[in-house]
Amino acid sequence: QVQLVESGGGLVQPGGSLRLSCAASGSMFSRYAVGWYRQAPGKQRALVAFITSGGSTTYADSVKGRFTASRDNAANTVYLQMNSLKPEDTAVYYCNADGRVLGFSTYWGQGTQVTVSS
Image (spheres, rainbow, N blue to C red):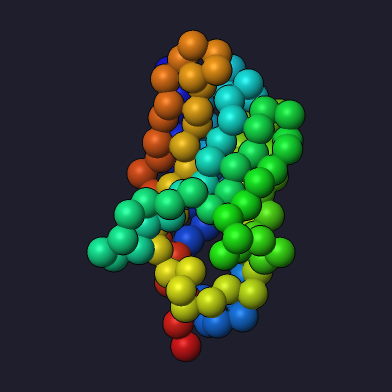
């Protein structure tokens, strides 16, 4: 069982930065891949960044070069550094711990709101 808590969202001006955190409970979290997803009003939830248990990352084209996912397994936390934010980045951001390759379930956090506006 894994519980996830996101934090770090807020209101930021275009061009600004935020760092989201996804803190996990559970002793095996370091073995989970983690995805950062976002959902804007009226749109489907979409994957923006993915980090494997080994730290390899992939990004959606819309955030490539601006967002960076990282993890601190000792702290059971995954981060999403978001730079050069744009109004279209406004959404609720969720982290997802994917344990399917381990034969486990996937888990979602509660989400954190990011609003990019002047």
